[in-house]
Image (cartoon, rainbow, N blue to C red; front, top):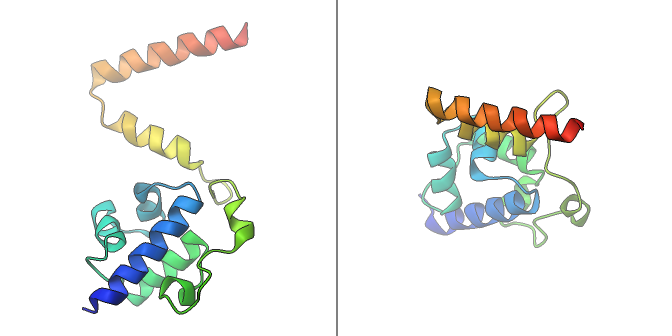
Amino acid sequence: MNEELAITVGTAARAARVGLGLTQADVAERVGIAMEVYSRMERGKVLPSVTTLRRLCQVLRIGADSLLGLEVAALNPAMEELAPISAPGEDPPRLRRLVRALRALNAEQLRAVSQVVHGALGLLRR
């Protein structure tokens, strides 16, 4: 593995991800890889396959040249102003993070959170 290239890809991926307001888990989910694999990729410990590289470019809204360090400007300035991306019909990143956190709760904890949410919603409706 070319360590310098892996670090370049990881650094560019991280910058693009942070610029879009996404978490590592958000990107991994959209790319279709395990979060641990994506994390290792960002740290320059592993290089993505060509298929994963292509999907990373799509998800992170970054050209392959930028991701591979062949271009100076890794991010299009207009992209930095965009809200975190969600495809049509897809939940926003904040909601997906909340759902992931809720899935980790046991039945009793989930019931307690549900009561709090329903109570808060009742106050908002007043």
